[in-house]
Amino acid sequence: MNQEEIKQEIKRLARERNALILAHNYQRDEVQEIADTTGDSLGLSMEAARTDREVIVFCGVHFMAESAAILAPDKIVLLPRADAGCPMADMVTAEGLKDLKAKHPEAVVVTYVNSSAAVKAESDICCTSSNAVNVARSIDADELLLVPDRNLGRYIAKHIDKKCHFWEGYCPTHDRLKVEEVKRALEENPDAVFMAHPECTPEILALAHHICSTSGMYEYARTNPAKNFIVGTEMGILYRLRKENPDKEFILPSVSLICPNMKLTSLEDILHSLQNMSPEITVEPDIRARAKQALDRMLAVPR
Ligand code: 13P
Ligand code: SF4
Image 1 (tube, rainbow, N blue to C red):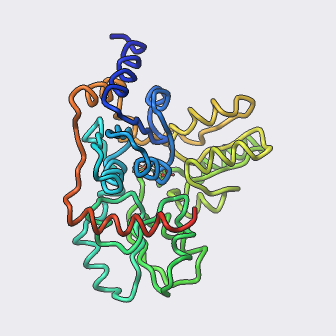
Image 2 (cartoon, protein in one colour; image 1 turned 30 degrees about the vertical axis):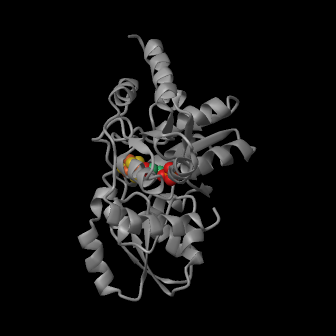
């Protein structure tokens, strides 16, 4: 089958299976093109929770499909590539978090959705890059544990007046963006605005004109009158930014802004997944119930 035939067959099978295809903003262009919905981690989780389709094909990484399975237990959640993980999510375990909690028994645990279901189950509330500060502000406590992203954690801490402890995890893709690379891009494009994801280091965020989630970048690019944007996040975001803003220029400051896990899923993988109804992502009931509490508390906070 050629690419066009594969796309048609995916659409036909998705209809037959009553499946919704979700794709994260970092997925390959052709995957975003065939998806019913693209979005950031929070947007896709909410979409999974509200759909009345029986099957969700999650084109993203493992923790995202797990979140969908937690929020939508009556649906079949497929992750076309079972090996698509998130190195940052793997930097914290439930056991490790329990140890940190024991050291700070008064602290409320705020966990980034980029984490396993078992870690969420040990958390009080979740957050994503688009609601992290609002979530932290909504908590009636003086002390927080911010897990697992040290960069998002320090970004949150700057915006609130609470004692914060950090888990020293990070996203390898965002963490390797260098200050010199951003400065060079700004020098070469003096009229450009720099938008950055909060998974970038504090030194990078200090250079940003705007800090937001991936979906926040679509909104910012659409509404900001600037013509040139330097983009401090994974390169998959360029597909929609360029499509929605044909008169604007989007500049990636570094060739290293690519997440190998987000690029694993191909059209062939999606087709196989729908044909075989696998790999299916499920979460053990006890963990699911406790992780769902943390996600539900997050969803109750205004975006
Ligand atoms: P958002 O989609 O929430 O901005 O997160 C980015 C990310 O790294 C997801 O893996
Ligand atoms: Fe994980 Fe970073 Fe890849 Fe997102 S971009 S999936 S945080 S490694």
